[in-house]
Length: 479
Image (cartoon, rainbow, N blue to C red):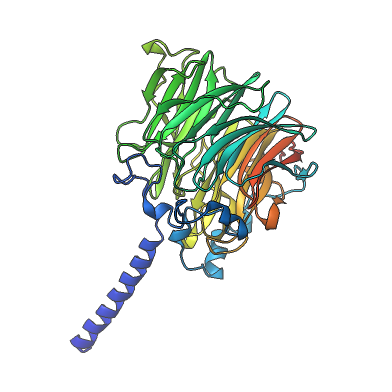
């Protein structure tokens, strides 16, 4: 063949490959290392929150007028809509899909209630006589956090509000943290300078405006703090971004909010983000978090040794790597629940053609994830989990369309473990229960409950709402 023709063919193939590689590079997740230009990381890198506007540029109240009222931190990283073939490829073959059943299906229990008359991400906890909901309220140039109590009868009481000064210049995508112990509740939130603030209030009083204590600065506000109680200590964990990379910190607080002990639990050459406390039948809780990276991340577990950490010997142990998790979304999030004694991890992920998914994996195996939400659209998704009955219940955002700006709804799915003779144990999923709020939109799920009733806190374009749910989660079935 003529050498000139061969050379031209080589150039054509090289250009084609370069175009493909360039397109693939566009679909990669944003690295979790934080820009040094934002030392407090209240904003994070500009690429991660591209469609947000500060209060001087756009009134956040105007967000309530369109289905895009609740902005998406991943909206600027929008990619071309995937083809039907790409979407089909995201879903496993029928033989590999978890078996669904009408057993364990969830149902609504009553009408949804307005917990707070302004939209925003919220967290829910089980209180002594009902439910506690916390979240952020944004005004034109002000911001505050709130804590309300919702009785089983439906009555709503404002327990406390916290003026946030300075206010965040960016919309919120994670809620404050709330933890309940007897007749008191503690709340932790991040202010506009990236300072983690904490306060504890009485649940017997209403309309409180308590003072808060500054715990740490340089917080990455894309990740919610986590709280738990270990003996007489109040444990608080958060994601630090002040050094240009993500690190996990743990502090022990007195009742007055004084830091009695602080730990950097991030190991060498690893990062730490998205902390979650979980107690699984043990005396003390365990702390789970992610070494979040592009491509392959790691799930880590940190065990505690005793009720008090006032002595050096009481420091938490070195974190243990549980398993790798691939294609975790940025910013990362995990939701945990045990099923038949085995820990299950749900996480927002990235599927084929950079579509948004929610995956489900066992923490003690290296099996591929099960898709709780297949990749049918774009934009960041959120997920919540809670143990219930013989299994667990998950609440996950699901896009109603392909664009990142497409409205979301929330699907409630019950999960149990199922075993077959001679085969690995699998997750059995119930049919999903769809939750929508005003204008058909629901976002930012959070779950709490007891053995009888669960409650979902979510936000729509007008308010934070509470929906009670009942799920009949049966014991695992052997085929």
